[in-house]
Image 1 (cartoon, rainbow, N blue to C red):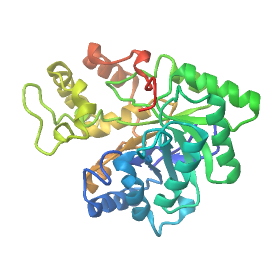
Image 2: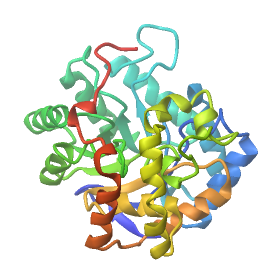
Image 3: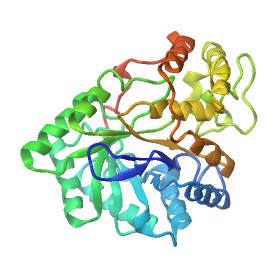
Image 4: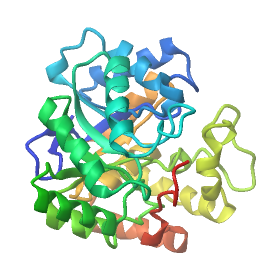
Length: 332
């Protein structure tokens, strides 16, 4: 396993991290989830990402139990706050009330006294940004949170937060967690340049594009039984990638992967790690062998010719519009 700094902070993270969105507490049984976490640890992954909303808070509980007994100081545990975790009007968003209540719930479920990184899961248009950042800063001062970051914020939103933190003496953001893959590059035009200037690192999710970049989905054919595309929770995130044109071009990547002795999944993860602003790529799994396969992308170097070949193959199916980074106009 290779390690990178999280942005310009002193925190080191495994360049491949393990995430339990969709899987833990919902898609797979707890024994299988524990087996995947053990495989991640065995392969040298030290960074684990979750969120209070995943599986209706159950994902944090599963991860906490799976990591029980592991030396806490050897782990980097990340979680998030924003999406609804209860029926009340204040059980959502980035108000001081919800942030303070949510971190206490997350720490209890994870079985830890602190999280290494606490992330605003979306931008909250209904809460003054100063209120959110002061609450985050208070959690840092209380020792419940070591670093703060965001997820799926636009460049303008990140810039606003940095200016407020600077003027008010708050702890600065160190990271952003966006969707990023060969097929989804919306952060490249604005978010990445800003982050490079300001010292934020990207912790990217869906580097395999919800499994599309594994090549298992074939144009003109129904998705394999039991795959993400057939799962009620996961299919809504993959539908836009399931056109025959996308799937046909993805199939053309197979010789590229083979030339480098990589599986398609390894090629996809290695591709995002070529971006120096990426601190870590999050992988999920329903089986331990998927974890073991994905971690082989760590340390892989792809030359400029290979990167150009991938661009040529995917061509017009790549999404690059920075306006695709959107938070809800009002709290869900």
